[in-house]
Image 1 (cartoon, each protein chain N blue to C red):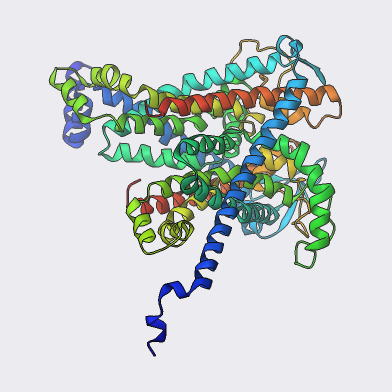
Image 2 (spheres, rainbow over the protein chains, first blue to last red):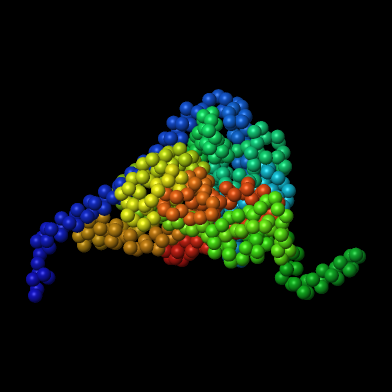
Length: 288
Length: 344
């Protein structure tokens, strides 16, 4: 009866071989999945790069769109306007929220902010876009406008800025605060002149993320920004504004080759900008 | 009001609400400014949900439970005079029921998960355990790039590359070889449909699963690996049988997070799903609509309804989608914080 328990392990070569084989197979499967992901990424980026570069020309950067052709100057300018406007709205609000939550974490208001921040991350951008449409564009009568688009985008970006600011401030050693308060600095001085410089890389990460979101988003802009074939006229309300992602979505469905070329050029511009920004933000928080 | 009367009323206020009066009387601190600015987030979320609810309320009342109990999106006859029901003007023949949208959303998300979870888990294991640490940084960055690509660019790729591929090769082959499985047989369609939408969605959510899981695997203590190795386990057995079972909650949390993302995805789905109107596909190749993409594709036609009821019904979809996503994300957060030992 003790035959099985006394049997030395070496005798079970078949089992050892099978285990080895299964392990090898497991690694092969895992490597294949990673390779599949790599192929997909290269495929997407490669297609955008090849088709985008062949669609690029000087005209893209110098002329606004005309019907199915022309350039993308109006869209490039519009995207820049929307991104800047969004950051102007979202950065002070988001950083303030993050600092408050990190520095004064006890108390109901900090918990409330954190709870709603987490909730807002989960709200799909199209929901915020539709709310922006019915509330800002229709009910408040802002019409398709840069203001409606910026407010909507700012709502989408707020939680990212808040969260990364919170993490950046929370990571600062308590010694720094104690030293600053001991030297007689007030709350405002400690936060603005001692902690904020120390937290800058982390805060910047969130801002860069917000920047790439505001450049790459489409759905919430369709019914808040509208579209315009002209350069921005400087008005915040009542007049629609162009943006790059709309050009991708619309011009790829047009039958003419010149329109498709505009879509690919816009895709190249948006993708390369977003990728550069997100790589930059990764490098910022890389341990120095 | 004289200054004496003002003082008397201030005193009365201080007696009635002593804590509020004290709060108002003290000198404002910097944190008060932060608290007010930070209040934009709660205010915004509550505002959006409240406004959507108020705006959609006539539609919620009039559509009733039938809204989620059928599959029809019918504006009614746009040129006829509106009928007033319960004080709400509606076009005659209008009928709104979004079961096909809920079905389309759940189906595309489910198929995307079936594809994304094995790929995400495999890639995470390989990144965390098989790749030297200097290469891990770069390969991880590479995978994270996938998460940074905008949705509309995924849609563009789906439209230009995936649709012809699915329509000409993948769908006919699947229909021919796997047609005996229910839902995979029948007409392979033209490429636009559930399969293409799910494939694009799965690409968009894989990085979420991979990155979360990779971090969790890397952060597992080395003593686990050493113990398993000492007991004679191979390295793969160590990962698969020792480390992964301990990360079940993390994996589920990451999956729920990915589901939340897939539910609300709009542009990429809009560009490849075929945008069905009023019915679920008969097989995996058929056109489909999701709640998010439907809001975009139907707003233009909803605006032709002079009573505005169609726009309100779309707001009801947005509200339902919003509540659904919030519920899913809250669940994911709870799971992940539970897996981290209670820390958020």
